[in-house]
Length: 313
Length: 278
Image 1 (cartoon, chains in turn red, purple):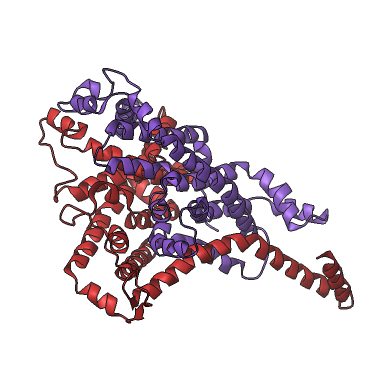
Image 2 (tube, rainbow over the protein chains, first blue to last red):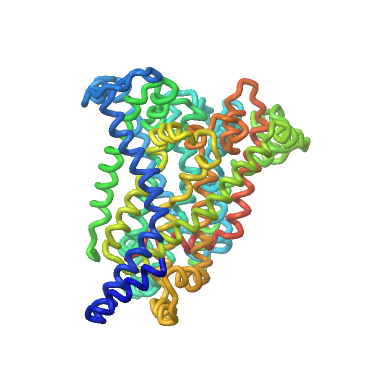
């Protein structure tokens, strides 16, 4: 190593000195960057790129799992079969309904809470921590606690009855199950995204608020003309990250409802798992994964278009 | 002036009510840890104050969790989280340093690739990846549980943003003293970055502490089960001992709660960079 680098240095001395030094420097920097980045890049290739290629490849093949015969190339046949299946479209529809409700709801709640808890109210730090806490509890644990709380003889029904309201069969009734999962996912997620927005709000320079106060703007006007525009970047990040994480929500569905009742909570992510492991259809699962990725990319692209194109880019 | 005071009082009350709503399930979880399953449901239907304060305190659930081997699952989770934090932090900090400090051709492109590749959520490609892991003979190993936690885009991103804020004159001065990139990284940047490193550790920790789908894909051997998986399994069993499930979940929730209470501000400081401009 050191012998070759001294040899390099000798060779460079014979060239124009300044030019040689800067070349050497560039090469040294590139080498250092490669070494510093190598572990991350290897992880990306092995853990992200490779499985994506595996899934693409699987989605155009068909075979009998466990058989010794290699799978055969079938082109778009798996997709054609998939698109002709009514239960697949129900899965897509349920996934979209769930996401259309849960993402705006979580973002609005997180934003309102972030604004509320950055106003210097007494005990703000404590309220923040409490609301953030569910995000740190493993999702499997939160799901189970909520599953028990939503039991017919559990405390949620107990509270509803105490208020004179009709109780529900939250996780076993087809009309309630999506709402129940939205409740659980939001209890877990809202505090987490709130933290990102609080951090973003703290970054907004106070002079903007002073200026708007001098102009006589009320709190609502200030919120829409100062806070929202200046919060655009963190807001976009939270919106995209939240959307993506809700599209792959898995633990509450697998633990509490198994996609039921009547397929109402059979979201794409759970169906992919179900196809791959319970129904032994890895090829259908791979094709569904492609559909999930395409839907996610499409929605994230729209979100970037809506929020990302601004004056300062 | 008084009107302002009333408004502040109302907003504070609102903040308290909302945090109570978030806290109630946790309080119910803690109370249910210290009473029998029968009593848990007797207290909630019809609802009484005892729902949040056990009438007969008992440690039977905790004993049942320990007898069921929960301590092994818990130590598996702790080992996976600890190794992920140490190794993941080293890997993330190194790449963040290269992306923020070392000038090289294609840096912007490399940064985009790193960020974009991490935008695909791990859960989405976990199933095809688990099939590769089984081909590579990694199923039922600690290594399989740890690997996916090591590369974390959010950790890389926040560390890079922090490193960008370190004055370049420090690196230049060290370079004049003859320090190479490794020395600059190790002796200049890392000591300055403690808050960012703590924030990144929290991000890495939360990822592994939350892991559920991946562990059920790559581990079938019960002695390697992580705590959340063990809880879900005993919840799904036919003879469900709900009390034990409550006790196990409470332990699993208390650990991150303590960590977060102590280190929350570092988390906020590190996520503050996610929305920032270049």
